[in-house]
Image (cartoon, rainbow over the protein chains, first blue to last red):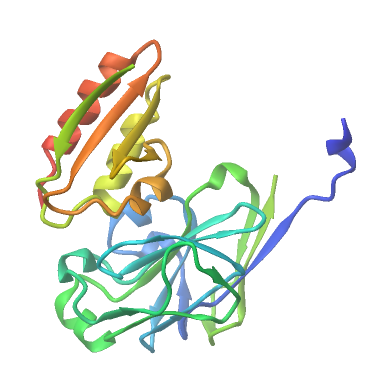
Length: 159
Length: 86
């Protein structure tokens, strides 16, 4: 019954990469465009460095270093997936700076990648940023714009 | 509870695409389903959990299901993992 008085939690997601924020439906991979994994946004990057978009803990870093998952203290799970079909690059050009269970702050350097190599070898260089546990989300607002690292690009209200 | 051991034969392992297929299928069942790698359990119904397992080519994992539809769940997930191709 005290839930009624509880202030609903919110998370502000900052841009993890310098680039243009686009709609997930424009991503050339239906796993992301159809939002099977979750909702969010994507970035057309102009630089090959990913910084943490939130304060949280690293919960997932695939061995190839092309994707990272962060869980915030509010319980939001965010997946950053660098490029499309980059799993087949088997780690070439990706350098992670953190490991699973590390605590990260907004703006901490997570992964650097060779943007030119991704453009040559992968299907697309676009970077989906997806909330994988949408069941905890009641509202998501995204600001589609050209963004610098650290700009606020999405607002999430939790249930 | 039922379980089965299975080897990952996909060159790229269980990342976004195969993991989302697997999670979608797992959520069709009522049973509790987990995947086990190196004695650690991962929730088969959570995409982040499945990806955090970091299962790559050649890894042996265990599918473990318990609940009223555990046999169907086990068989269905087993065939999805067996069918994974790059």
